[in-house]
Length: 242
Image (tube, rainbow, N blue to C red; front, top):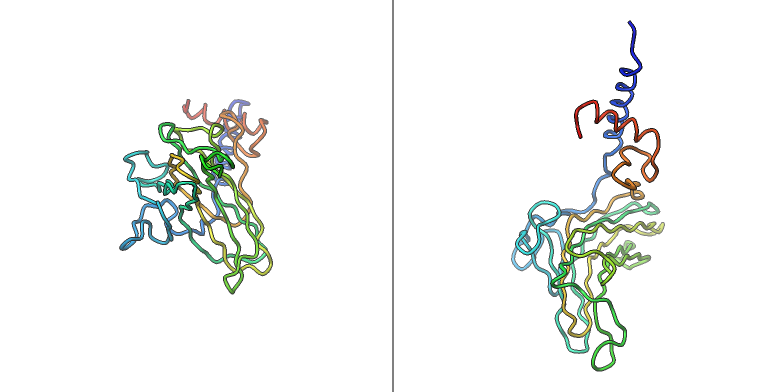
């Protein structure tokens, strides 16, 4: 049977598209209630998470959730010339020596944006502003922190506002680590105004998967435009997908 060049291209393109879907699966998320959809009992805001100070559930009222219907809102305690730590955390078992990646999303509204930390910005000469961090602490069997890694998830005046922004952190667990504690933290100094929302948090074993570099980067390997992207485009084009 004669196979035309056009059909050959279509078959190759469809195969490439299917391969892209097959290789796009994510590793297992070790966190429970990662999208903060399940409310906790009593004064616990989110099931499976421990919270401290100003943490609230927003049911897509102030901000449409990034995933599901609910996200976590945090803001400071407004202590004159003082510091307040506000956040949620969860501890999970891990494999000693393995690599772990923390990812999640934050939303800062421009009308109530958190402010960059100024070490001497308060009226009394102390610190003023915010520091928003995603933290992974590795603990040994006695619950002692043996290693830590953190990422600043939002920088005032730099990170985009009024949209969900992804953050990511990759760290290696020490050989004597048995657990990882994930903390989503907003530190506020003095009377700095502003709020931040968190959603869709993940802790997975392994390094973060490469992401597309732009809208034309349709197929792996991501981060480069190559012939596999052309094949993926032809597959979509042949199926009538614009």
